[in-house]
Image (tube, rainbow, N blue to C red; front, top):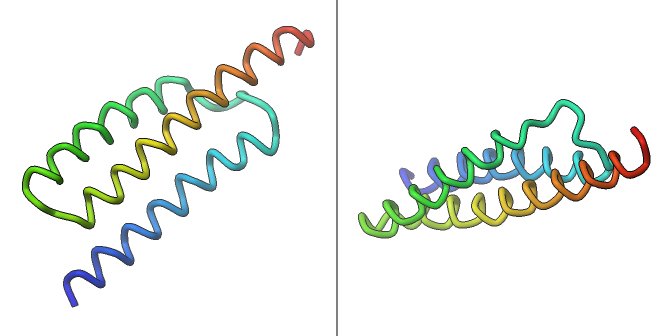
Length: 90
């Protein structure tokens, strides 16, 4: 039962944060999105991934590994759309 709670919570968190990156991609804008959000989350996710692996907590190892990828996508989209919007004069 403990593992089910962990995995269910992990899925909820992942869906929430992945949705944010999807929304950013779909709208093609950086307005209202801070680059520091993704940078901070990236650093925390990498640290938590390593920590979770070292303590052999697979729920958090997988979750934070996926969050690391999500944050990299968010950072990439942020700078891509920021540069594109500045080029288009927005």
